[in-house]
Image (cartoon, rainbow, N blue to C red; front, side, top):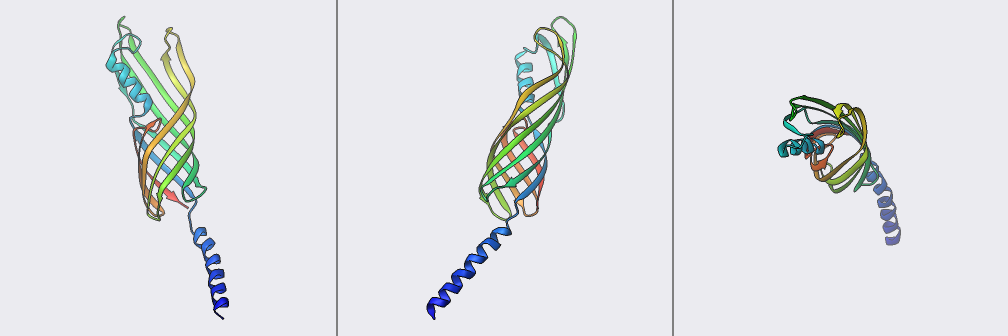
Length: 192
């Protein structure tokens, strides 16, 4: 009789585990805003050092990076997805020759993303990750030889040292990293 009770309890437990795992939400969409992207930092550094194509003064303007993405949890620890990021920059100033600088850049980045979740509770997730993909730069600028350019493909990347998502279905998130999404990214996400 004890054997039958133990067998039944094991069978019930075995059937309950998949049911609990089926409650695990595997899809997530998110939108966010990133500050101090890698390309903005590069232009600001060049400006500070005074080496933007011999410019005496240049002003870098533009908002940060706007992004949207999708993630699919392969397990409670690993998620894969895609992120699309857009950023606009305008650089104005004067070359040492006295000619005005009026360059603008629209960057569209499409990156595959991998995240590892150290903590993946129902209401709090802590993770790190990386993203990589093509970057398309559209705009008007001069290259090193002085030719006007309007398109250039590059490689986009993002390394997130740490990220935190707080909330259940709807949540807020923040990430510290480096790349096309920025040093600090804040946004909202929804799991379904």
